[in-house]
Length: 465
Length: 160
Image 1 (spheres, rainbow over the protein chains, first blue to last red):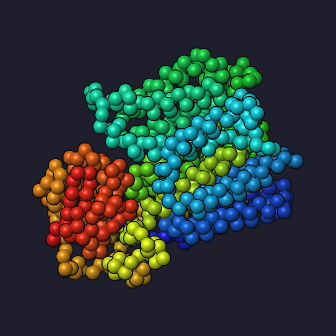
Image 2: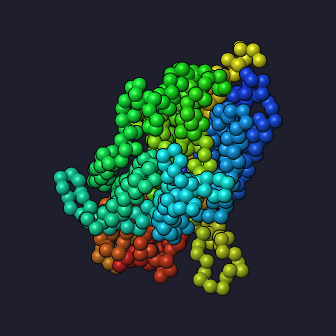
């Protein structure tokens, strides 16, 4: 493991410069979407832009104060993505619709929650104490949408929503964080046991059967999500998250083999037994068949329209506000990548994908740098969850894999997804703060009776190293 | 607004996106270099004032400079490891500098690293903990020569 001993530098000024550039991207996009309809600088525009800018700068200020060694590029990337998403959603609002302002509200709420996480949690290692509470919380969050009374019923074929007063919320989005905390806590304490026991078959060392417990649990959870909530995307996400975390913890390829075998078996059976899975796969393979295109439900109209939109955009795009991405159903949520592909073209879409890639590498960089096993696993798991989500969504929109109902992180319209992803950003920033900061070498406080002298101030001896 | 302006703005926006990406990548460049000297150069006067231990003063012949690590108790009793300038990983994992054959030690148990003229020990989230002079570590602490550090059933000491 590389422990790069670089001089700890806060680098908050770099962050501020990049943040201003990111705000220019977000606000510039918002300006461009209205530029040819002579409504570029209406009151909505000033309202939205100033709120986004203030929120981002407040976040930056909090980092200066609370996590000054945090990674300087994570916040700018996320603000840029969120800004582009806001602009696109605002642009797709039909007259009278208010999704754009709703998304802005959720952005502000999500940023406030992420700030609260950084402010009150202080150290990610505290989360390790909540390993099994997280497991219980995940189970609860995943069961909630099935409970009559709070369940919002079946919306668009999936039962993943709950109703909270006037709003709906997708608890599964938050469950990916609690599951990552549980896996990280469990694997960091039981890693040695899982690693050492087992039988060797050829080049692979297989684990003992009784150590497979968590694997089976994770598999059951994802199959359960698939059957009861009819949500293929989340099912892939949860299981992928688990396989990656156990692989990172043990570096045993056998886990990946077992995991893929299990999911292939489960997926095959699901495709045979459940009509919605079968429809999805058939629609994906035969998207351009006329009969499939017009079928409802489960037709391929959405995905084919998205592909036509992106083809219309070509290399440089039609320009923001000048294409017709609104022809695609769910253009501002599931298909927002197709909308961006149409209006920004391949060049713009690649920029967006690269931003995700950079965010992902920064998460892994934080994992490499932090010194505790729990933090490493948590950072890997969270950044991988974001990356896998991007893969599933962008792969679905571009017809690489069957289209599933996951949201594009930070871009797509939807409050629960924004909230969950901003919390992930808060946790990653905190882990990178401990990873990049100086090693805490202040001595332990004497056991008792010296609280008055201040626990965290270094003694003279350490000051004069 | 004229078509020309709109087209200019359209391409300007794509350019801005890529300017952002290249700025981010160049801001990250520092992290991609390995090694202290290459990454940060000689610490500036201001940095030295802020963190005094960064001053590259020639290792002053301190009263008792630790030169080796000795196992005084446990299965590896008698083993000694010379201390250079690089950190030492203690644990049962094969990549550890000192591989402890001790059932009560974790794979990556603790890390011993030099800072300034002293050595510090830090627990790496081990299951059974690391004890410096019978006190469990919760953060990195300086190790003076002759003070016992207990990891599982193994006790190590720094010797001049």
